[in-house]
Length: 179
Image 1 (cartoon, rainbow, N blue to C red):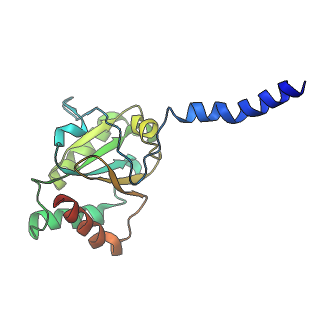
Image 2: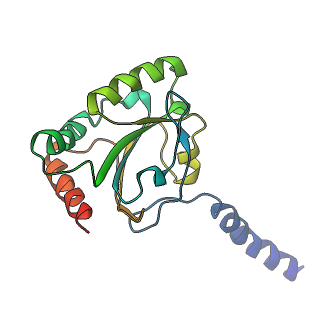
Image 3: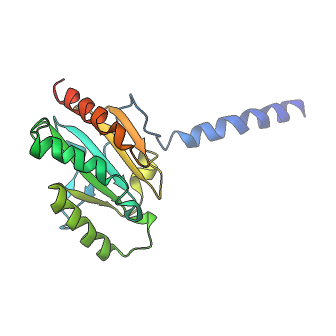
């Protein structure tokens, strides 16, 4: 009886450990697992599409799409107006978390198309919440992930980025493009 209780007790701790290894919670310092998503025209993209570039990936619930608009505008200004950041070494883009919203996919693609034009970028679609499973991204939120050229996570921001942090993050991105 004692053996059975000990085995049961040990298995209570071992089983969750086995299951938790299937999903990775992306953290600063970790290499990000690759993925494949499509854009509105069904063209496939992976992180290797932008090999050798620092990546800013915005994982966005469409209901929160305006949350980090000031940050993205500051990044765009650093690229297009101030020329402090080069598209040759940096790629910022969005991945829409379609599963976290009530909005129909057609409406999401229209909204995303407008954002892609505004920010001169690419918008990809995560219809099945793959990044929630693969990277542990939260649902119903807006997450910004900064990856270096080797796809190591250098920063992760969940929710609204305070405008007072915009310049500090842009400086970090500029530094990563020079590594």
